[in-house]
Length: 243
Image (cartoon, rainbow, N blue to C red; front, side, top):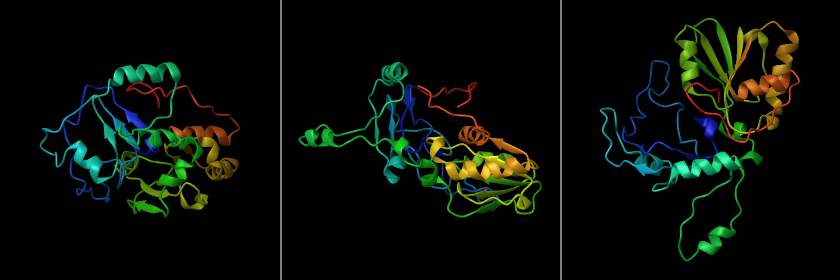
Protein backbone atom coordinates (compact mmCIF):
# COMPACT_ATOMS: atom_id res chain seq x y z
CA UNK A 1 0.00 0.00 0.00
CA UNK A 2 1.72 3.18 -1.22
CA UNK A 3 -0.20 5.23 1.36
CA UNK A 4 2.52 4.05 3.78
CA UNK A 5 5.40 5.41 1.72
CA UNK A 6 8.14 6.89 3.89
CA UNK A 7 6.70 5.42 7.10
CA UNK A 8 7.87 2.82 9.61
CA UNK A 9 4.95 0.43 10.00
CA UNK A 10 4.26 -1.13 13.43
CA UNK A 11 2.10 -4.29 13.51
CA UNK A 12 0.49 -5.31 16.81
CA UNK A 13 -0.62 -8.81 15.82
CA UNK A 14 1.59 -11.29 17.76
CA UNK A 15 2.93 -13.40 14.85
CA UNK A 16 3.63 -11.90 11.43
CA UNK A 17 4.55 -13.70 8.20
CA UNK A 18 3.00 -17.11 8.88
CA UNK A 19 1.33 -17.14 5.43
CA UNK A 20 4.52 -16.17 3.61
CA UNK A 21 4.66 -14.15 0.37
CA UNK A 22 2.95 -15.30 -2.86
CA UNK A 23 4.46 -15.10 -6.33
CA UNK A 24 4.86 -11.66 -7.90
CA UNK A 25 5.01 -13.27 -11.36
CA UNK A 26 1.30 -14.07 -11.63
CA UNK A 27 -0.88 -11.46 -13.37
CA UNK A 28 -4.55 -11.09 -14.26
CA UNK A 29 -5.86 -10.56 -17.78
CA UNK A 30 -5.32 -6.80 -17.46
CA UNK A 31 -1.63 -7.19 -16.59
CA UNK A 32 -2.02 -6.45 -12.88
CA UNK A 33 -0.33 -8.60 -10.20
CA UNK A 34 -2.75 -11.14 -8.73
CA UNK A 35 -1.73 -10.79 -5.09
CA UNK A 36 -0.19 -7.33 -4.66
CA UNK A 37 -1.51 -3.78 -4.49
CA UNK A 38 1.17 -2.40 -6.82
CA UNK A 39 3.49 -3.53 -9.59
CA UNK A 40 6.83 -3.39 -7.80
CA UNK A 41 8.75 -2.55 -4.60
CA UNK A 42 7.66 -2.25 -0.97
CA UNK A 43 6.28 1.12 0.09
CA UNK A 44 7.10 1.22 3.80
CA UNK A 45 10.54 2.39 4.93
CA UNK A 46 10.76 -0.28 7.64
CA UNK A 47 8.67 -2.86 9.51
CA UNK A 48 8.43 -3.41 13.28
CA UNK A 49 6.90 -6.66 14.58
CA UNK A 50 6.71 -8.65 17.79
CA UNK A 51 7.56 -12.04 16.30
CA UNK A 52 8.46 -12.98 12.74
CA UNK A 53 7.60 -16.40 11.31
CA UNK A 54 10.42 -17.93 9.25
CA UNK A 55 8.52 -21.16 8.44
CA UNK A 56 5.34 -20.00 6.67
CA UNK A 57 2.59 -22.44 5.76
CA UNK A 58 0.41 -21.59 2.77
CA UNK A 59 0.06 -23.27 -0.59
CA UNK A 60 0.73 -20.01 -2.46
CA UNK A 61 3.79 -19.07 -0.40
CA UNK A 62 6.96 -18.61 -2.48
CA UNK A 63 9.25 -16.94 0.08
CA UNK A 64 9.30 -15.70 3.66
CA UNK A 65 8.50 -12.15 4.68
CA UNK A 66 12.16 -11.67 5.64
CA UNK A 67 13.36 -12.87 2.22
CA UNK A 68 10.90 -10.59 0.42
CA UNK A 69 11.94 -7.54 2.45
CA UNK A 70 15.64 -8.33 1.97
CA UNK A 71 15.11 -8.58 -1.79
CA UNK A 72 13.66 -5.06 -1.78
CA UNK A 73 16.26 -3.65 0.67
CA UNK A 74 13.66 -2.82 3.32
CA UNK A 75 14.84 -3.18 6.94
CA UNK A 76 12.80 -4.71 9.72
CA UNK A 77 13.08 -5.53 13.40
CA UNK A 78 11.40 -8.18 15.57
CA UNK A 79 11.36 -8.93 19.28
CA UNK A 80 9.67 -5.59 20.01
CA UNK A 81 6.73 -5.13 22.37
CA UNK A 82 4.66 -3.56 19.62
CA UNK A 83 1.59 -3.11 21.78
CA UNK A 84 3.56 -1.05 24.30
CA UNK A 85 5.03 0.92 21.40
CA UNK A 86 1.56 1.49 20.00
CA UNK A 87 0.43 2.89 23.37
CA UNK A 88 3.26 5.44 23.15
CA UNK A 89 2.14 6.38 19.64
CA UNK A 90 -1.43 6.66 20.89
CA UNK A 91 -0.38 8.98 23.71
CA UNK A 92 2.12 11.10 21.78
CA UNK A 93 0.71 10.97 18.26
CA UNK A 94 2.61 9.90 15.17
CA UNK A 95 6.33 10.17 15.92
CA UNK A 96 9.55 10.07 13.92
CA UNK A 97 11.60 6.90 14.29
CA UNK A 98 14.53 4.96 12.91
CA UNK A 99 16.18 1.56 13.26
CA UNK A 100 19.89 1.63 14.12
CA UNK A 101 22.57 -0.93 14.99
CA UNK A 102 23.81 -1.02 18.58
CA UNK A 103 27.56 -1.13 17.94
CA UNK A 104 30.75 0.92 18.26
CA UNK A 105 29.43 3.52 15.81
CA UNK A 106 26.25 4.05 17.79
CA UNK A 107 27.18 7.65 18.66
CA UNK A 108 27.64 8.41 14.97
CA UNK A 109 24.31 6.79 14.11
CA UNK A 110 22.52 8.80 16.79
CA UNK A 111 24.00 12.01 15.39
CA UNK A 112 22.26 11.42 12.05
CA UNK A 113 19.18 13.63 11.77
CA UNK A 114 15.72 12.12 11.56
CA UNK A 115 14.15 12.09 8.11
CA UNK A 116 10.67 13.61 8.27
CA UNK A 117 8.66 12.24 5.31
CA UNK A 118 6.11 15.04 5.70
CA UNK A 119 8.65 17.49 4.27
CA UNK A 120 8.66 15.59 0.95
CA UNK A 121 6.09 15.36 -1.82
CA UNK A 122 5.43 11.65 -1.34
CA UNK A 123 2.69 11.63 -3.97
CA UNK A 124 5.15 12.78 -6.63
CA UNK A 125 7.57 10.06 -5.50
CA UNK A 126 5.15 7.18 -5.95
CA UNK A 127 2.81 8.31 -8.76
CA UNK A 128 3.10 6.86 -12.26
CA UNK A 129 5.11 8.96 -14.70
CA UNK A 130 3.03 8.11 -17.79
CA UNK A 131 -0.67 7.26 -18.31
CA UNK A 132 -1.67 3.59 -18.23
CA UNK A 133 -4.91 2.21 -19.69
CA UNK A 134 -6.80 -0.83 -18.38
CA UNK A 135 -9.71 -2.50 -20.22
CA UNK A 136 -9.29 -0.19 -23.22
CA UNK A 137 -12.67 -1.05 -24.80
CA UNK A 138 -14.67 -0.71 -21.59
CA UNK A 139 -17.33 1.81 -20.61
CA UNK A 140 -17.80 4.18 -18.84
CA UNK A 141 -14.42 5.88 -19.13
CA UNK A 142 -12.84 6.53 -15.74
CA UNK A 143 -9.86 8.84 -15.32
CA UNK A 144 -8.00 7.80 -12.15
CA UNK A 145 -5.46 10.24 -10.72
CA UNK A 146 -2.65 8.19 -9.20
CA UNK A 147 -1.74 9.71 -5.84
CA UNK A 148 -0.69 6.30 -4.50
CA UNK A 149 -3.55 4.13 -5.70
CA UNK A 150 -4.17 0.49 -4.76
CA UNK A 151 -4.53 -1.84 -7.75
CA UNK A 152 -7.70 -3.31 -6.26
CA UNK A 153 -9.41 0.02 -6.94
CA UNK A 154 -8.72 -0.41 -10.65
CA UNK A 155 -9.84 -4.05 -10.43
CA UNK A 156 -13.15 -2.91 -8.91
CA UNK A 157 -13.74 -0.59 -11.87
CA UNK A 158 -12.74 -3.00 -14.67
CA UNK A 159 -14.71 -5.88 -13.11
CA UNK A 160 -17.79 -3.71 -13.70
CA UNK A 161 -16.87 -3.12 -17.32
CA UNK A 162 -15.26 0.32 -16.99
CA UNK A 163 -12.28 1.59 -18.94
CA UNK A 164 -9.67 3.06 -16.59
CA UNK A 165 -6.94 5.49 -17.55
CA UNK A 166 -4.46 5.87 -14.71
CA UNK A 167 -2.73 9.25 -14.96
CA UNK A 168 0.13 10.97 -13.05
CA UNK A 169 -0.69 13.15 -10.05
CA UNK A 170 0.10 16.38 -11.97
CA UNK A 171 -1.55 15.36 -15.25
CA UNK A 172 -3.50 18.04 -17.14
CA UNK A 173 -7.05 16.75 -17.34
CA UNK A 174 -9.21 16.86 -20.46
CA UNK A 175 -12.90 16.38 -19.61
CA UNK A 176 -13.67 15.20 -23.13
CA UNK A 177 -11.57 12.09 -22.50
CA UNK A 178 -13.46 10.67 -19.50
CA UNK A 179 -16.96 10.15 -18.10
CA UNK A 180 -15.98 10.23 -14.43
CA UNK A 181 -13.00 11.33 -12.35
CA UNK A 182 -11.52 9.21 -9.55
CA UNK A 183 -8.92 10.65 -7.14
CA UNK A 184 -7.06 7.89 -5.33
CA UNK A 185 -5.66 7.43 -1.86
CA UNK A 186 -2.01 8.20 -1.21
CA UNK A 187 0.66 9.25 1.29
CA UNK A 188 1.71 12.55 2.78
CA UNK A 189 0.31 16.03 3.20
CA UNK A 190 -2.44 17.16 0.77
CA UNK A 191 -1.15 20.74 1.04
CA UNK A 192 1.84 19.92 -1.20
CA UNK A 193 -0.39 18.52 -3.98
CA UNK A 194 -1.31 21.90 -5.44
CA UNK A 195 -1.21 20.66 -9.05
CA UNK A 196 -3.90 18.06 -8.36
CA UNK A 197 -6.12 20.59 -6.60
CA UNK A 198 -5.82 23.00 -9.55
CA UNK A 199 -6.95 20.30 -11.98
CA UNK A 200 -9.86 19.26 -9.75
CA UNK A 201 -11.01 22.88 -9.55
CA UNK A 202 -11.13 23.08 -13.35
CA UNK A 203 -13.37 20.00 -13.52
CA UNK A 204 -15.59 21.31 -10.71
CA UNK A 205 -16.04 24.69 -12.37
CA UNK A 206 -17.52 23.06 -15.46
CA UNK A 207 -19.70 20.88 -13.22
CA UNK A 208 -20.53 18.25 -15.82
CA UNK A 209 -18.57 15.19 -14.67
CA UNK A 210 -18.99 13.11 -11.48
CA UNK A 211 -15.99 13.08 -9.14
CA UNK A 212 -15.13 10.51 -6.47
CA UNK A 213 -12.26 10.79 -4.01
CA UNK A 214 -11.02 8.26 -1.48
CA UNK A 215 -8.72 8.90 1.52
CA UNK A 216 -6.14 11.46 0.31
CA UNK A 217 -8.26 11.97 -2.80
CA UNK A 218 -11.19 12.97 -0.60
CA UNK A 219 -8.98 15.53 1.17
CA UNK A 220 -7.82 16.93 -2.17
CA UNK A 221 -11.42 17.20 -3.36
CA UNK A 222 -12.34 19.00 -0.13
CA UNK A 223 -9.38 21.37 -0.59
CA UNK A 224 -10.53 22.13 -4.13
CA UNK A 225 -13.92 23.37 -2.88
CA UNK A 226 -12.32 25.60 -0.23
CA UNK A 227 -12.08 23.40 2.87
CA UNK A 228 -8.99 23.27 5.06
CA UNK A 229 -7.46 19.95 6.09
CA UNK A 230 -5.35 19.26 9.15
CA UNK A 231 -3.23 16.37 10.41
CA UNK A 232 -4.80 14.15 13.06
CA UNK A 233 -2.83 13.11 16.14
CA UNK A 234 -2.78 9.60 14.69
CA UNK A 235 -4.77 7.84 11.99
CA UNK A 236 -8.01 6.00 12.74
CA UNK A 237 -7.49 2.57 11.22
CA UNK A 238 -9.79 -0.42 11.39
CA UNK A 239 -12.15 -2.58 9.36
CA UNK A 240 -15.10 -0.30 10.22
CA UNK A 241 -13.26 3.03 10.25
CA UNK A 242 -12.22 5.30 7.38
CA UNK A 243 -8.45 5.77 6.98
